[in-house]
Each structure stands twice: as C-alpha cells, then as structure tokens.
Length: 96
Image (cartoon, rainbow, N blue to C red; front, side, top):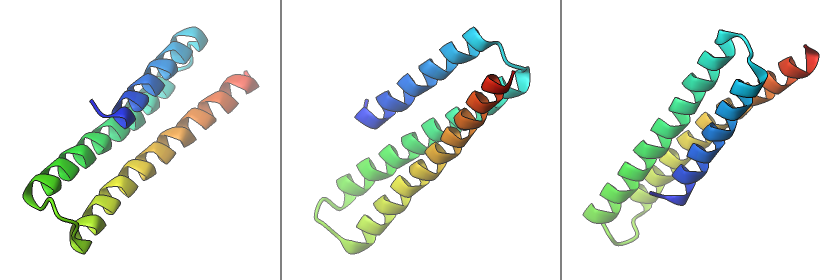
C-alpha cells in the first residue's frame, strides 16, 4: 500500500474517532463518509494509472507525465474538499 493511501486511511480513522466522540448530526457522518470515500477512490485511481503507465511506458514521456500530474491533482482536489468538510465540522462543533 502506498504511503499516501496509508495517510488517507489514517486521516479517515481520526475523523471517525472525532465523529464518535462528538456525536454530531447524521448529516456530518454522511459528509465525512462521502468526502473520505472520494479521496480514497481518487488515490486508488491515481495509483492504478501510475502503475499502468509505468508498466506500459517505463521511459519518461511528456504525455504520460501530464496524465500522472492530472491524476495526482485530482487526489489533491478531493483531499481539499475533505479538508473543507473537516474544517466546517470543527467550526460547527465549536459553536455548539
């Protein structure tokens, strides 16, 4: 398992602990589940694309680099969305 996927799984575990401890409304559970699954799915697609590209074209190639960069950017966008949800959850919990 890649380092980044382990990190994402650990972040999800922390969020589940926060959810259990804080007991927010079910909507927050759904938002965390949705964004976390999007991040992990993006990470898995990124890993699959990189492995396939490296296998099919082991030499450096500009077009493959662009594809890999785009896949990595998709993971970043999903992670930023999940971070926004986590931030909103923490603000919500502080206002209770």
